[in-house]
Length: 492
Image (cartoon, rainbow, N blue to C red; front, side):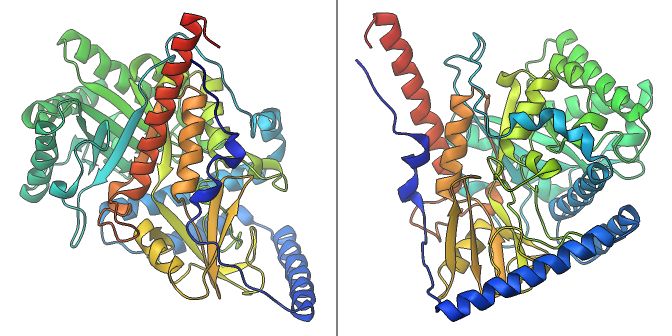
């Protein structure tokens, strides 16, 4: 028995959803090139001459957070994450030399198989946010879609775990009830997000407060028959004291010790940052590796509109593009996953994040609509620049919308007039799923089921992106098993 796989570059070429193109006269094209050149020079000049970028950047992000939609906690968490990622950018701009030693990992297929990861069934970890009005309800979740569902999120208030009010308590029970239809499904709950005063930072500061928190999360897990706890602190030591990093490691150590002491089979995971500056400051990676079952790598929000860097970019590119230099070459899924491994996290504990949302931009000039095109704000699509996959589908169906798929970064973008959006589609998530399996990572993480097409608006199939991830993850797993069997039988 033998099998061969089509080249990855061509494998998903037919998965593009819209491939409309527009034609221009030579005169219009020449004018567009001239405008682009003038605008490019202007933006670069302003950027290079802009003094005090650190202070301006912080103010810009506070402005950004003030003007985004505050309908739910997850939106607020997203806003804060963008603020912290922006500070990472500013840090690296002030110290460009510190990124060069790792630039060689970009666009490299790792393929370092180990005994621990061979033939392991890939995980498909799906975050599910507590629903708001007209949102995804637990009853509408396919119980056989994900291997793990993480309900997001509870918070830490006054050094303690926040209480579940009746509506959220009902949601947790309904999600846990899905296990009746799939006994293998694991249901966890996420605690965290951005930590303000009285949150994670104060809770982890002493042994007594950590001990009380551990008691609370174990009690919660027991009350609702949960399979594990996921912690999402964004981010230890990044804004506060350096000791937060140590205290976070101590918290995880003490949770693991308590689980072992009580012989509890609860899973323990952490949602972690993707940019190198945050990783270096926030996490003692070898310590985390000792205590965690897996990490959920938030491999998204690499590019979004900010006033001090007003250009388009990919939300979650798989690889860097040749034209990206310096710190920008590190802003992709492959680089982040490899860096976590290099820092000491085993590959079989790295679950690679895939977003079901995108980021929208408003173009300065409709004629300049590629990567790094000047932008003057969020797009009108979505809320505060955040766009669900359902909203992307509606945008793609509009007359005049142009779809482009970048074969280098393996992600699409679309534009129509001044509206521009970067997102993931079934083609890009297929490449990411293939990448995850070929490089022996633990699996894929989806953020979130709520942002996917759970109603089947885009096509007749619900949860289109998540389902596509599962198809490729499982198909590739069957291929790996077939390959191993062929080798064992001496059939090539």
